[in-house]
Image (cartoon, rainbow over all chains, first blue to last red; front, top):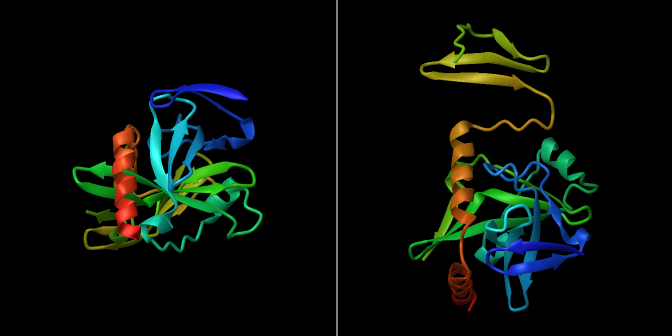
Length: 136
Length: 78
């Protein structure tokens, strides 16, 4: 088990195989390479906690909880990076935040994970029209 | 910043593996062709900056915000 400290949850422990490796970090956060998902029983919302910085954690969810229908075609770079064995065998999570009374979902920069090898990547989608979905 | 003048169909090389070609010039738009090793991520700068900004805004939320989003999801799905 690996112990790590977090600002929000105190000291946590995780099995090494539960660590998601973003080898290139996230966009603008290149040093944030190792994360764990913190699940709750009664919600699909999760925390994605960094092991590299105790302060950094994201609120994430599968896109369907926001009624977002994605058809993500991963490019060769992402597929190669995730070492996908089957082209559709990946998990998508979107990052969410609060802005005033609104909830902002970043659907333009989703996280894509390969659960078989625990590799992750943040991809950048070009279509700017669908960039953020806001709900009141 | 290095500034070079190129015409349509002319290219520049960056190092040994990256070639940028001016494909078309039309009004104030330039179409670029980029040949680079697979694995090198290429973004439109404004898009990259937007996602970066969004990541920074999203990285320091607290439990209250988690609850707020969760409640919104619940009321949406009820």
